Length: 138
Image (cartoon, rainbow, N blue to C red; front, side, top):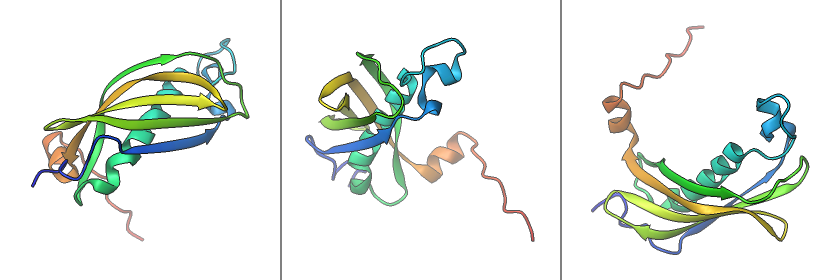
């Protein structure tokens, strides 16, 4: 049995966020407009995609981003609520392809595709030398 055996085309999830000043391009790059930044939109699309399949993965497995191909179509000011949506469109041997969109009310502000790979967390961390900080002694 493979880690993607329970993942299927059509699975969906959404991520709702209210845009804060920290999510704007102007917060990161001085002089830029105080509107929802493209990297934040992509992060929220990735979070929706991960949420769509995580409940169907075996214990100890997670999905990680591999590829993003996204258009940012319209600016969104602070205070608006954005809905990022991800839908599985293909399940392959070691990865899942999603269609992703972002909406500000009834207006589409972004769309594209996103691919996530599925990994065994312990094996992945061992392979790349990831270490976790030890808890401080009291």
